[in-house]
Image (cartoon, chains in turn brown, yellow):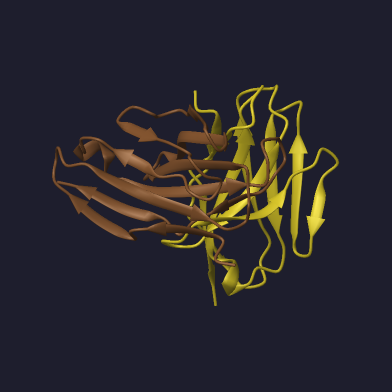
Length: 114
Length: 110
């Protein structure tokens, strides 16, 4: 089992460009989420999904879109990249929507916006 | 006020030392507590959940003090391989989303 995979590992964008960060999981987990990690800020939740067809906003959703058409995939879209979106992005899954469950993280995507 | 606050460190300790980290959380209604470990340029991984009665996993002991709203992690007999950043994690009160602290960096020195 691959667990949680993310592509690409690294990306450089120019301001205004768009791109999609891919996240896939083979653990059949209901809950998937996207975080960004910035120095001195900790991981912050961008968007999450409790199952196929259901998404909701986290703490810092502005500038990002998500969709969840299958259990396995949860892409994150940047519609018009800004330098403030330079960060490390982690996708995570959780067995189900509930408290106390472990989250499994992908290896991350390092994004630089110039 | 941040939801979760940690001393960023760094903590530099010799092999074999005992080291303790504390973390405070702001919302008394939070119910799930965790410590995650993150190695340099890697993803976070669950180290242990924190239960009300306290819990131990080998050299690691986690404690929860609800009255004072803090969580602690004690590492005994530190190993070089314990060098990492330790993230305190608390659920959002009334929800299942998680708040992550900024992490405490530990370096174990030979």
